[in-house]
Amino acid sequence: MPAQLKSSGQGQTLVLTISNPEHRNALGPEIYAAGVEALSVAETSPDVRSVVITGEGAMFCAGGQLQRLLANRQQAPQVQAESIEGLHAWIESIRTFPKPVIAAVEGAAAGAGFSLALACDFLVAADDAVFVMAYSGVALSPDGGGSWSLTQALPRPLVAELLMMGEKISASRLQALGLVNRLAATGGALADALALAERLNARAPNALASIKELMNEASGSSLHAHLARERDHFVKNLHHRNAGLGIEAFLNRQTPRYD
Image (cartoon, rainbow, N blue to C red; front, side, top):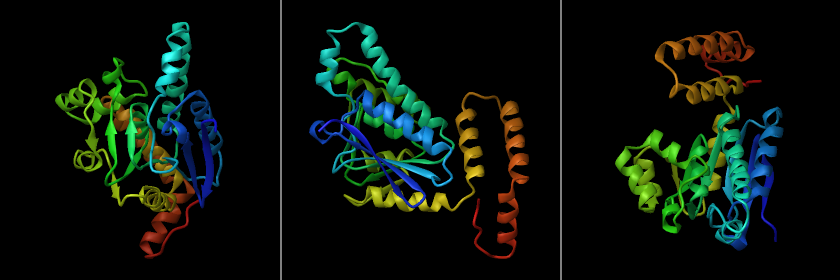
């Protein structure tokens, strides 16, 4: 069965499932392209308020398929460069997607699979899930933004351990470090991710889009510049219909239904 990215709807949540069970849900160009296309369509769909990315069965994603990488060594370097650009286009589309994206991780997230999970806004993992940046074990270096995400979030010595030594790290330790939002019982990561998505779906989409944009811009911005962006987003959202709905509902002790 060829590798594919399956798409299904759960209420207002789009579920994207990496399906390549023969190769432990390894990634490839067809999955990257499908991921970019799915998010492009979902971005303008009023029926989609959040996205969950998961893997088929008991495995999230093994990263790149080593047999394909070995074959690419016989090709011009541009062949692998173009493949990585496809992965990076998907990673960037997740980061810039104006709606919440949740990773639901069972089993293992290895290599680019770990990078993919880190690119999401929320990470829900089974309590026995493991994460590993396995690149150095086969004389490679990271892709998919993994080295960027980890360096942004963790102390340098720990990042060096994960990247240079390729050490496995448990979901529970990642939660203690602030990188995993929720621990689920084995087999329950997707259900817990969907429950989290439902809570997000009940919030104003315009406000969540602003918050995600502000988060994305914060690390590369001065405080002065960021304060100006916060002001502009706040004013824009205050004059959005949803702010009226939310404020009135709060004052009247009601539950708002946002557009």
